Length: 357
Ligand SMILES: Cc1cc2nc3c(=O)[nH]c(=O)nc-3n(C[C@H](O)[C@H](O)[C@H](O)COP(=O)(O)O)c2cc1C
Image 1 (cartoon, helix red, strand yellow):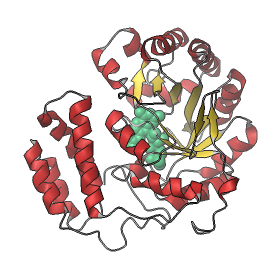
Image 2: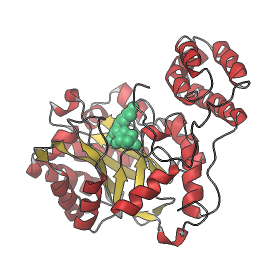
Image 3: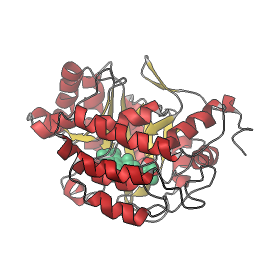
């Protein structure tokens, strides 16, 4: 099926509480160190239906940690204000939801039940929080009640390991406790990011619950989203690694869901323009010196130049930028480059993209 022939009527906006409709049904995944306001703004402007903050600790919120409250900052005029929290203590989770509702005027809370990092799971948080199903239910209930009327959603993995599958119970609890949707990443915590996301579990979850199900895992180009929806019947998709250095994926997806046009990759001038914009937003949002924003751009820059001719050399140069002028020098060079043939063909299926690329 091509973009042109896609029947857009098959798709519907996903309700998120009484006020918000997610359209297109495409969510920017919460990603630590990535989905702060600057990147959320870029993705939103390119058409993401909902942009969720990186995960913030419920304890950090309650204890007033500076770093946590910085992570929870929204941009001027940013709506909806969508924040992801993590923790496993029902009381602390409920109280942090109350604080966020009262003090940050948030519009949506997502709960992280998918983090696979041992530092988190060892403390019973992230993906491990679903294992104790009674406590898990208490956490979800506490957040839903404290957040009211703000809608609450959860994001889970299929389980801790193949021997400890938890997504079915997660689905039943999410539905029973009044979550607005459940997002499922089709891997276990043990898998981290290895192997392929198992979309068949997304399909199973969709058949199990009546609340909207969002599928997550291995969407790298717009047609992947279409395949996931077709194969699983899910209501929408959540996109993580596929949009790193590639916010145009959201534009392509919006066109796909609106049925308004072809996917394409950005001309180099646009790519450079977005890198400049990203840097400017990092400087202004964090009220930082251009130097510390330049340091943050090291990571983002290496993602943006993926697939350009000479990308390996550019990545090395990005790793060394110290000041804005270093960034500008690289961008001037990028303007003279082209893409490697075949790269970022927006109509291609899944590319093999790894975190450490
Ligand atoms: C750098 C990075 C940071 C992440 N941080 C979070 C996070 O804070 N909260 C969360 O729920 N998932 C986090 N994830 C997982 C993603 O939200 C997503 O579930 C996962 O990457 C699978 O989707 P993908 O195949 O589209 O990348 C992170 C992933 C990456 C790559």
